[in-house]
Length: 265
Image 1 (cartoon, rainbow, N blue to C red):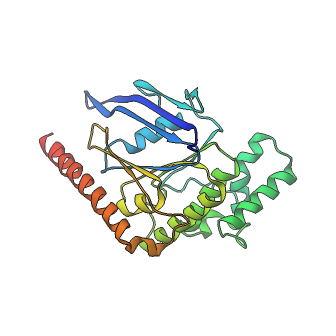
Image 2: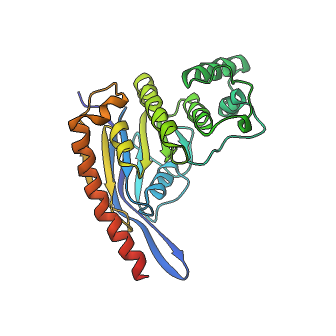
C-alpha cells in the first residue's frame, strides 16, 4: 500500500531583488513526497535547490504558493523538521554528546533521558569513544555525523539535508552516503536531500527531481528502482549506470543553459 503524502509543495515561487533587478530563484515548483520516502532535488549550481529547501524548512517565506507538512501549512521553522547544512554548524564550545543533546535540552526532557538518547545516536553514527571530544578535534566527516545525529535525536517528521557531504573528500563522501542509507533503513524518516552530484542522488534516493537552470523549475522526475539495502557495489550495475546517464544528460542541458544565461548578463 502506498504511504500517505507527507510533504506537499504546490506552485511555490521565490523572487528577490539583486542589484536593482528582480530575480526569480524558483518558479512554480510543485511536488509531493510520501511518508518514509527518500527524495532528492538535483540540479546545477544556482538553480534554486537550496532556496527551495529553506522554504520547506520555514527559513524563507515563499513569494507565492504553499508548502504543507502532514496537511499543515509551513509558516516558519518548527521542531517537526530537522536540517543538516553543508557547512559545519556544530557549537564549538560543546562536546559531541552535548551538541547532540542540544535540541533535547530545549524540549525539556529529563537529563537522564537526554543523555540516553544522545549516547544512542553517538553509537548509531559510529562516534563511540568521541563523546567528549570538541568539534575542533573532529574530521569533516565526523562533524557531519554529529550534525546528522543531532537532527535525528529530535525525532523530526521530516529531515532536510542541504548538500551535507559537499565539503568532504571523495572517499569520505562515499562512506557518508553508505552511512546515510543505513540510517534511513533503520529509522525510515522522510528525507528531502539536495545535491548537484548525480551519482549521490541516484545511490541515496527513491525518487530524484531534476531542476532546471534559473529560474528553478522541476524539469523531470526519475524513479530509482534499485533494491534496498544498498552498498557501493551497486554503483557499477547496469541499471545504476543507465540512471546515471539519464540524469547526467538532463543536468548537462541545464548546466549549458546556466552558462549561457551568465554570459548574457
